[in-house]
Amino acid sequence: MNYPIKKNKPFTRKGANQIAEIANGIIDPVLAKRAGISTALLGSWDEIAGEEFADCTRPEKITWARNDGYRDDGYTPGVLTIACEGARALFLTHAQGELIGRINSFFGFPAVRQIRIVQKPVAPQVRHARAPAPLKGEPARKLHEMMEGIESEALRKAVERLGTAVMQQKRTR
Image (tube, rainbow, N blue to C red; front, side, top):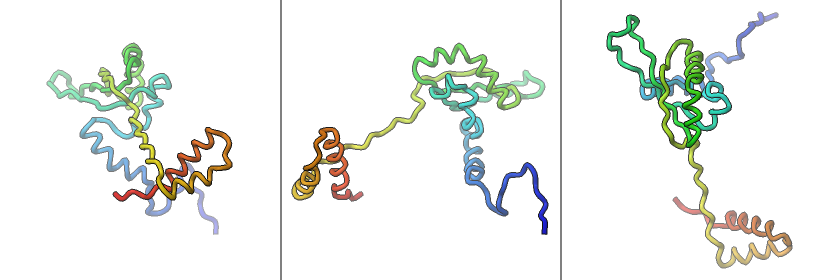
């Protein structure tokens, strides 16, 4: 039996949803209510900002103005708040006209009339793990016996760090 071929449709199982669709369905209403933005804007930010600003900026929220009765259609473009790292904010200030154009073309209508730049760290701070406490007693003697044949000092230190972490007794939480 020949089955008809469906063109331009991605393969989906009956009743199965992608996890991204489910997550976006949950997250989008919260983002829209709290920040006025969507996961589509966050996901496409690297392309919108361009490679010059993608690594140092992040959209935070869009503040929509209230309708004061000045416009007939009742719509006023909003103010996009962007977090920017350090001195790159000056360069972003000079390029904000182009960025507003890119954002509005992404939305397909004039959604943003102004950009507000806030200087703050964009990348999450990486927490480094503490070095394990030195071994004592029998485990320390055992580790030193295992490292006897290692001549390179750098390799010896690396193996000692690894052995200390592996042979350390598990912490109870």
